[in-house]
Structures are given as C-alpha cells and as structure tokens.
Length: 399
Image (cartoon, rainbow, N blue to C red; front, top):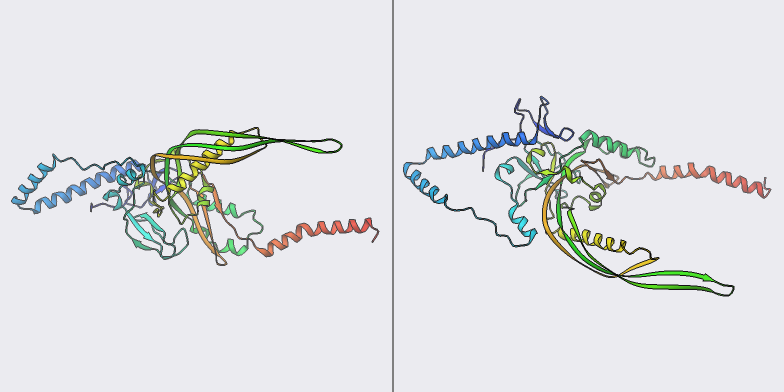
C-alpha cells in the first residue's frame, strides 16, 4: 500500500475542511483557502515522492544478482501492455469492471459501520463519526473499505451547517401543533452533512401505447334525457431520451425523502475528488447499479407513458388499454450528492429530516401534540358554535 498523509493545510498543517460557500478547502486553524485542484496537485506530488522513496529504499536493499534479475524483468515488462478490461456491450457490467479506487485514494479514507441499522459510512482520516446519520445510534465501529466502486462525480456542498440548522429551525416555526418536548429534545445541533450515493442512468426508451378515449354529450326534452357517447381507439409510439436519471443507492435513505428534495443542479457536478470529502460523511451504497436498475427503468417507462397520454387531448375520458416499453441504457455514472441530515426519536418513533445541501430544499415528518390539537380545535370552532347557537335560539324565540 502506498504511503500517504491526510489533507492538511500547507501553511500550518491544520485540518482542512471543504467550505461549500467558498467552494474551497478551508483551514480550521489559519483560515487559509485552497481549491480542491491545488490540494490534489500538492498531495499527488507528495505521493510520488513517497512512492519514489519506498522504491529507492527497496532497491538499495537488494544485492547485485537481484538487481540484474529485476532489471531483466523490468526490461521485459516494458514490452508488455497493461491488460485491458474486455467490454461486454452491457453498459452496467462494463461500468462495474472499470470503476475502481486507487490505493492512494483509499489510504485517505476510513470506513465505519453502524451496528444498529447496518449503514456503511466513509470519511476522510480526520473527520469524526460520533453517531449514525440514519438511525442516531452513537456506536459506530471501524470497518474496511472493500468491494466498493469509486464515484465518477460529486456535487459539492453549497450550503453549510449553519444554513441547515437555520432551515430546520424555520421548518419547526409556525407549527402550532408541534410538541414542545420534541423541539426541546431533538438535538438539532447534531445535523450532519452526508454525501448520498446515486446511480445516474442515461439512455433511451422506445415506447408504444393504445388508449380507449371517449366524448359524451347529454341533452333532454320534455320526456326523456339522452346521452351520446363517441368511442375512439388511439395509438401512440415514440422514442424518448433520458439524461442522468437519479436513483439513490442507499436502503437507509427513504426514497420518498430523496424524491422530495430533488432536483439537484447537475451543472455544478464536477469530477470526483477525495478533496471534497473532508468534514463530511460519505454513505457507502448498499444497492449496487444492477439492483437499482429496475427502479430507474420504472421511472423512465412511467414518464414515457405519461408523455404519450398527454398527447391525447380533447377527450373527456382516456384509459390505457395496453402499453410496451424497451429501455436501452447507454451510459452509467456514480455520483455523490450533498444532503444535510438529522435523525431524532420522540416517544419511541423515528423522525428523519433531509435537506438538499445544494438548493436548501427540506423534507421531514413532524409529530402532532394531540392535546394542542384538541385545544386548537376548541379555540377555533367553539366561538363559531356559540354564535350559531345564539342565532338559532334567537330565530326560534327561545331567548
């Protein structure tokens, strides 16, 4: 394994954390700012020096016979081309075969496992993981980074932790039925930034559908009422292209939460670099690209059917009689997308809040205080009921 070091400030050796508002890594000690590209270049040079030193040390240790053998071996090796991965024509299988981490990148990462919910989390060497962002469990144990593909892209965090806390406070505000004890004990300060794994599918859908449509008109005379119904057989077919259909690869993150905080702005997506990770947690996917394929297929086929049905206008009623779709994926990508998360429990029930770390869109369920609900009902409707009762009594001369 290659020798390497964690990302530290070149000026003072302080800890570097990615600052989404600046789009740069900030030193927590001297506040110096560096672009991810600057840090990547610096550590690439250090990595080369470390590798060269290890290579030189090993070379000094071998005797002349070994040197001759090594030289002969190296001479032969120069004429051998590296083995290339054979492409199968299946974009999913070809993608899996070619997406691997380098040892230099994995040396800068640690893996943690949550024994409560099974979430597998990746962090840089200096970011502390004190609790699981999905279930709130405080026990996280070291694991191994294995059998995981390297991301192709990342959308860096744009909103910082303070913005996430402010959004949650605002989300709680104006909720008169929210229990006081919930807001007092929900540990809002424990919000965590998590890079959630997404598979992005690009391809085409060739679809066709038949519809039963009808128009009706009704009239009447002095004796009867009449209805005239016209029936139509409609047929539609076409091809739709889809670019970067997102499907999250984490079973721990509810699909409804992820759908609710979409969309992400892909124009800000950049090639993946470990330099964007310091200060944040990265969720390791537990649904691979093959397992998520069905959900991606359902998303594009349902959209294609809706679009075809949308072209059948001018009818009072439309029913789908049959449809077929053929999906062809042409490109697969693995991206990390930024999400601020808070997990809390109240009265034995779990509550998970998620906020888009790029746009600020937030989703989460809130409990309802039944006592407050009853009190609010009485406050709103009791005066109205009294007024109505007085009006009725006055009309009938009861008073």
